[in-house]
Length: 195
Image 1 (cartoon, rainbow, N blue to C red):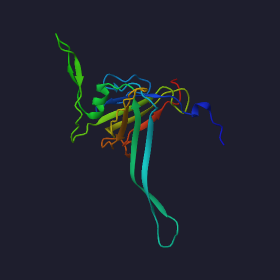
Image 2 (cartoon, rainbow, N blue to C red):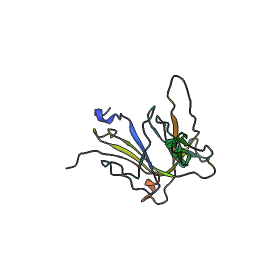
Image 3 (tube, rainbow, N blue to C red):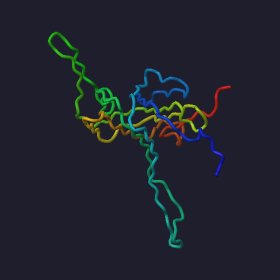
Image 4 (cartoon, rainbow, N blue to C red):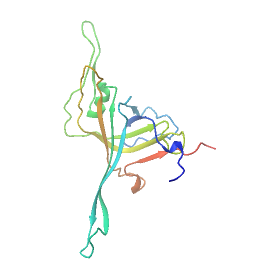
């Protein structure tokens, strides 16, 4: 067993942002600019899953596998948005909110159509934590250059709990990535202060 440091145990929550595909990611210590939309507070944490499907190859001369290859891989980010606004739901639907301002004798309303159609809107996705680096009390962030919102949007209206919006963000390969390794983006952690 190694000599682990307390900061190697990751803790804390983060902030989720979306922007148009090809938006430049902010530096790790910079505040995201107005191109990035903060999706608000979350409930139940944020889970980032890197999954894969592998195939084990065998030959007649061996009982065990002699090689393995990866046939599929995915990056999935899941959470629940605690701020159940129509604007947050619109991001997930890829639609716009229709705002009808109040007027004399007319109430103000906001509306969101619930039919989504064939086209999926794509976004760049940023998940940033204030103290999530494994190398000290430093920030870390996931930078996903291209993806879409997936999964059902099931709003549970209960008398004894708040309504949250379940979110699944699926990464798509970025054909403009600088290298094969960066096609799903990257996880970057600060490991030292500037000199």
